[in-house]
Length: 120
Image (cartoon, rainbow, N blue to C red; front, side, top):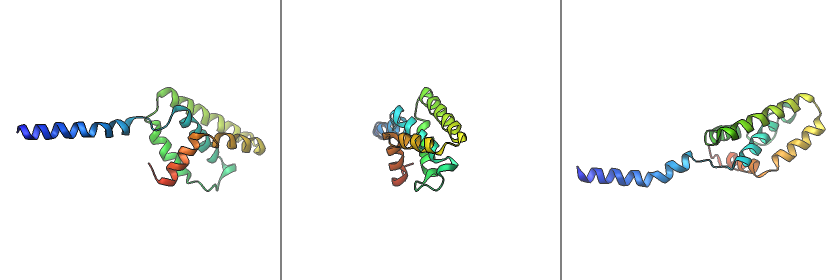
C-alpha cells in the first residue's frame, strides 16, 4: 500500500511539467494577435486559394486561445472584426498591404510552423 502511494506521488510529480506546458500559453500575446490577424486576412474571399492549410491554422489558434488571457482573446476578436470590415470595403490594394503587414509578424510564422508540423 505504501509503495503504491509512493509510485502515485512520483507519477504526479513527473507529470506536473507536462500538465503545466499543456495549459500555459505557447505564444506571446502579440504573436497570438498577429497570427489571428493573418488568419483572418487569409479567410477573406479575396485571398481564397492560398497555399496555407487555413483550417489547421485556425484549429491551432482556437486551441491557443484557451491558453491566452481574456484580454488577449478580446484583442484578437477585435482584430478579426476589423479585418472583416476592411474586407467588406473591397479595396484590394489596401487589403494586400494590410495582409502582408499582418502575415509578416512572428505570430504568423508560429501559426505557419504549426500548420506545417501538424502541431495541434
